[in-house]
Length: 313
Image (cartoon, rainbow, N blue to C red):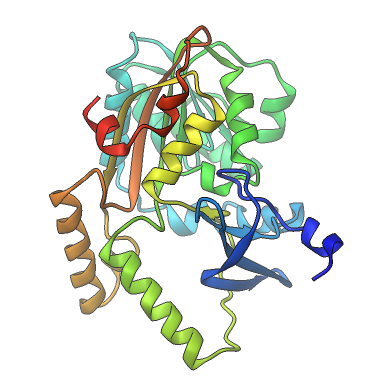
């Protein structure tokens, strides 16, 4: 491989590192293009290369193909649980930006607990549907960045960061619209975190690759990186050290095996049980609540704080 070819590779979206190796789930072909999954040589985060182009993004996130297909039957109780956690750090009527609001379920939950929601969504049709559901303003991504909406008391990123080509840049831009002392609430998947589901999926994936070397998957590359708990927490510290952690938890849902056959459901049940034994290590999802203090003095050692210590903070 020439130097010119190597320089065109995407850098790791979590740590900014270079160097890579082939990683599960290897590759997929979507919209006439091939996308590879590679692991960062520095932090081991798995990410997609190359980043999909604008036309592919539009096709992946069209309302009918994405939101209606994956979130039509989502459990509202989970959104209410998250909204109540956020409400515990905010006064009544606080303004909450839900960036990547999807169907508007979290916006609806935010209003239910007495906060004032404001949504942003990629697809225009999805934004309109979310606005109707939540009875609040929802803008497209383009309209939001072209406008002046700011001074939010909280920003929520629910299952969003893994979809962004440059999650660090977007997070910095969003924090510029958060008031000093405001809350960042991020939650999402941990697809390479210790879990029986992850272990089994990886073993089955490698076995299939050995048995069928030429096999190519055909799923859309919606998740542009796959992280574990330690990598994800380190990302927040790296992007903005002035974020003071107030809550960090890992938990397990058994996805996607929880909806599979008998064997897959058994593995999913084992994954949930493992998570219950040690939530600071096992789990396929995270929740993080941070206070943004622009005047905060940061000690370099705080960036490397272990998850076990953060969990107890």
